[in-house]
Image 1 (cartoon, each protein chain N blue to C red):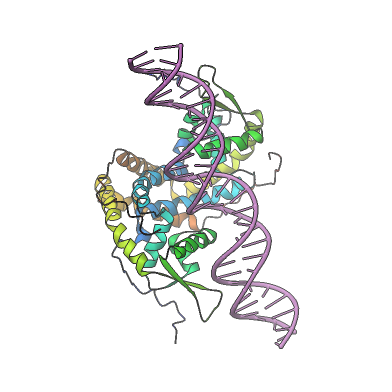
Image 2 (image 1 turned 60 degrees about the vertical axis):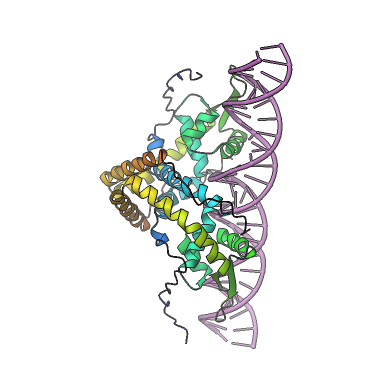
Length: 172
Length: 172
DNA sequence: GAAAGTTGATTAACATGTTAAATTTATCGG
DNA sequence: CCGATAAATTTAACATGTTAATCAACTTTC
């Protein structure tokens, strides 16, 4: 018995703001973490990170894809993608070549070895997704996804007139 | 000749899986990014990262808080928090001491300088939140948050019998 | 009351996020 | 054809995410 009942947290509120534990970014972060926790635990057993798995999944759906396009599909920034591709190539899970028409563009494909790994990992990944769907409810899940997509769409064109973004440089 | 107008992506589907761009983790990630993009742009002007701002906000709401508890509130892992606190202390935005009762526990408070910075940043942060709320709709936003919280609750107790998590170690 | 176990916090090591700069190749205007 | 500009990718630099290991301080047990 250790809990001393903690003094119920004084509400100092030196700066009046929303209760930040209920902010939208926090809600999204916590929800995603609750979901990913399960997938990470599984992927880890196969030596894959979440991002590496995203890339393999994207590659499995196409024959070949350009690096820039892959970045959009897998929702990764260029530098991250560049590093991960280097690693996946070293593990022989993907293959790369350069576009004949435009020497600047890189073309990426999943390798036979990569496909084999995916076939190994996919079942448990699907099982986890099914468990989550069953737990939360397929209907609610679809509804949630719809709302998330709508949110993304709403904010896509949002331009915020940030009047108060003057340089400060006083708090370094 | 090679199709110049995007060849509409051949559906290779070497490994049958869900369309991953519509998976729940991706939906959550994309939605969060759509939101955070705006806050990051603002915070950056004040020399703060998203995580540093989360910590300051958490600290502003209390008098003093233990490191472990701060980690829970700000939703950061111990190592990340440890590094960020070191940085914030060096910038004199927070103050630290050690609990008399238990020398292992660290106590953290926001400094006067930290409060001053918060008062500077808060307005534009609130403005961004207001703009997002207006754009998406206050009602829908509340509903979304409710669904996210429910999802988090659903998955909290979820135990997945991962039958297929055998050691592979073949793809490194 | 000291060895053994536990806990709070940090450090270590590696992977990714994020922005800026560098590199290479294309393309354009003259 | 040439120099300037743009585009695709990578590298660089720093901050955080993630797991494991470390270290010190507390607790339990015999």
